[in-house]
Length: 244
Image (tube, rainbow, N blue to C red; front, side, top):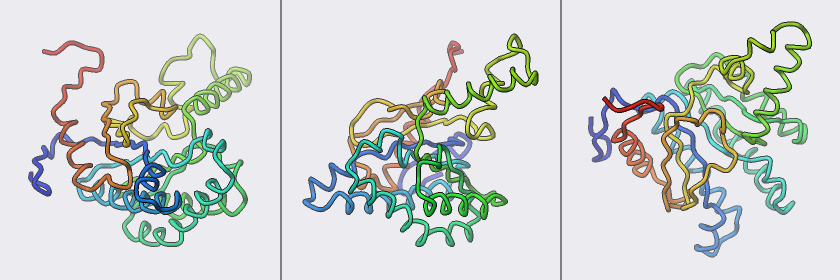
């Protein structure tokens, strides 16, 4: 099929795309506007990217929206980011429900104020029956944190005699992650030219195809996402095996 002039194989689309949305601050500096204007422009790309996934039938879009390391930023920027999250809720949530999108949260919400926690709970609770697509928001998330939380859960299961430690396997561990029901990402995209995964989905991306682009997130268009998917389709995924 041809989408916006780009040829895609409808039988080889990723089921799960994860994105590290990087470059909002640099975009703001290059355009001589406030950092919050950069983040707001980035929000437009979130909405656009989700629309592409819905159009193509891609089941899951996971977005690295706020890492545990982001608390090191200035209080002004953190406050602005949380206000932007509330803005996203007020502007888009009704539309997400109407479009039958399920919203999930990955991370620990207890660090946020009650208002943000309520927004997260509302989005998750009121869309739990939706099944057209999944928007998984990684907010106050870190891959190492997720692994530590999984280890804590496994230790408790052993203590409670629910599992013998000698029976522990990868499947048991995976079931203790934030959302074990989700397929592992097929494609991880990072914008802005950085070539690292920055503590994002460390367990789940063992065999994920990585796509790095110099494009800053606020400039990452619908066509850029389609080109990333096209690049993914040109790769051979062997999962540690040999090519036939």
